[in-house]
Length: 279
Ligand SMILES: Nc1ncnc2c1ncn2[C@@H]1O[C@H](COP(=O)(O)OP(=O)(O)OP(=O)(O)O)[C@@H](O)[C@H]1O
Ligand SMILES: CC(C)(CO)[C@@H](O)C(=O)NCCC(=O)O
Ligand SMILES: [K+]
Image (tube, rainbow, N blue to C red):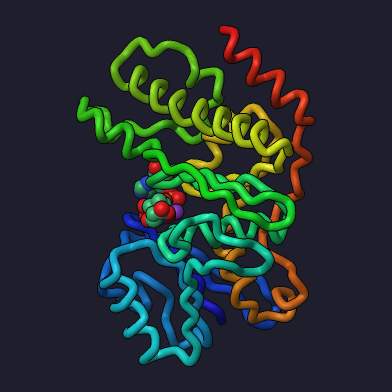
């Protein structure tokens, strides 16, 4: 079995992948911590022959995690943000400072779609761009839905947006505090992503396929105006592409990859931008 770990600032996601069949056997999430309990926080390490890690948590978390895993597992691969990988050049002035989850998402998106806009809707919402040809432009970081809500300190933090809500319900004026807050932060997030996408495609003169991942991807997706696809395993797919271990991975097959959304024309994107400026 292969253990894949996506360690975030607050939540750590894991999945177990069968090295022979390339099937995902199980998955889970726990609060990010320094000391893992194999068998409860993460699967029993006896069945694990290799680990792949993407971590944006504090340095000590990664260090402790790698120390534990190296004692028990033969191969431990840790992803890093590099100046170049898999045909993509990192747009950051200091490439190592780009969050490795963003780098994994951008690499996966490029493998799947060529140029792309990769959006991670987690604790933070990040939007990254890779042009056809592989130039990563850099991107945008904004607070995620939960962080935005908590920062208001209006006592509404425990009432989350129902992930099954329709965009139409979330975009109308709220008539209770919880609703006003939920609708406000939803509007902030989706308008930002819509606008960022249009501005960058306009600037670069190319319509790009958009890919969404992260805990809030499904609900954000309903407010996104352009064609896009939700890819829950996008960060894991970056790990697969960087450290291919199974036959399917070596053949370039990324697990859970969605169909590539065809972007609308540049003319439409520009017309939409011009329209929103007139209002
Ligand atoms: N059990 C949960 N705990 C926290 N957030 C949750 C939970 N379930 C869904 N969410 C939603 O998912 C979002 C976090 O998404 P995700 O798990 O992708 O985070 P992340 O960006 O990986 O986190 P991290 O900061 O740990 O990197 C939150 O904004 C929240 O709305
Ligand atoms: C922005 C987050 C927190 C999103 O998980 C992560 O990618 C991160 O810690 N990035 C480092 C800062 C940067 O990407 O510029
Ligand atoms: K993340």
